[in-house]
Length: 223
Length: 223
DNA sequence: CTCCTCATGGGCAGAACTACCCATCGAAGT
DNA sequence: ACTTCGATGGGTAGTTCTGCCCATGAGGAG
Image (cartoon, rainbow over all chains, first blue to last red; front, side, top):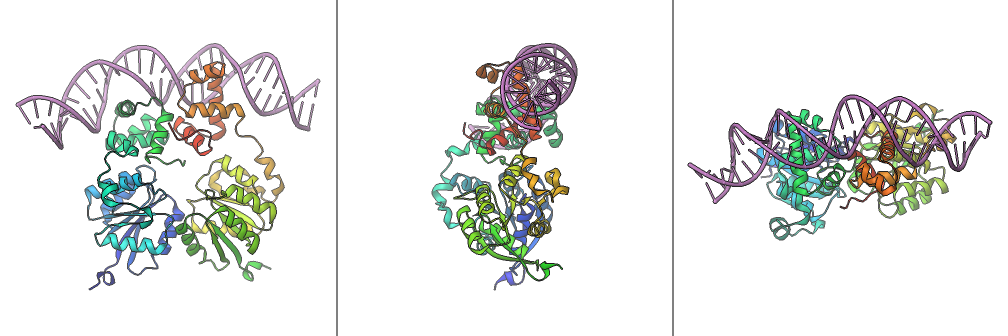
């Protein structure tokens, strides 16, 4: 018995570009087995929406404001493991894929995929299996689970989740005061986090911190 | 007599991500006045297709393989001026907009726009007028008919050579004092250059300045 | 010749960052 | 039970940045 004929897969679209969300929605709604239950444009609201409405699958972009796709995926899979995450990304670097899968993503596609493939990935992931786009050439065992010494893994190896969150906001040009207000802590705490980050990374300027964040996928190069 | 009721606007979609093209196609085909006559995924084939099939409008992404959107736009408007180009970009920096308009683009939208806006831009541009997304804060919206003066408008240079040099060093994490020493001027002069750069670009933090420099190829993302 | 831009530089004030010092509290691990 | 680590926050100092004010001189455009 095929349950997809009875119960549609409830999907949340998370991408910071409205027209991308609209396009994905238009494409996916052709599929009778899929129902778009919401759209979000940044990490924080994605996590909030997921907690509140418990979609079956979140289609997640990596670069989003407030909280990037990696952190958002981590939080979702930590706190509501029934919600599956499919990553739709421009980056096909092995380290990036590994990072996302480690964060709990169940699927990974590049943005240059066909809509059929995305629909397939959604249904596969909803069925509690993994879907990694074959063109990525990922060896699951080798690349994902035995990759603790990946060079491009610095941020996750050295920084705490809080520090990564602070780093992202620093790299977006926010001041300590602004970050403190957003995170409901004192500016002093943000200064402390920044100092820790710089000490761990042996970096001593905002400019280099920003470049590091970009290299690690913690922030986007976009404005 | 409104010709759009008789003759549909023939549109070519140029974007290197298949799923983005599919999404745009699905969205635009709802509009009865628009007909998608082709899709291309890189600059060279976009120019070739445009020459061969003479679409009314090309919806162009900036980042594409082989030949980027700027070069492709330049070639199209140079060789087949009847073909209008609408840029759909992630970048809304004035510098970038100016670059595209100089290359001959007639429309400029950020990717985070509504599909209605894209459809509107296409019809406006097809009618031989300009459509610059209002959120870009570009002034000549009302002056669409003095099209020949566009290049003069964008002619005000954004950064001087000296300012680019200073920007590069700022984006490498150097302090004003260090930059001043290297360039054999006073730190005060560097402060002044930095202030000018920020004013021109409407940027107010080192982090965003660094990102701008990376986008413009003024600095490398590497350490 | 006059106006403008570019590059140069000074002063000042306030904000922000960087780097130290110090501390408490809870959670996780040995 | 003890230690370590993460997160929180305060104090102080010096540096750096950001944004204003001001100016001069060179060189190009009209």
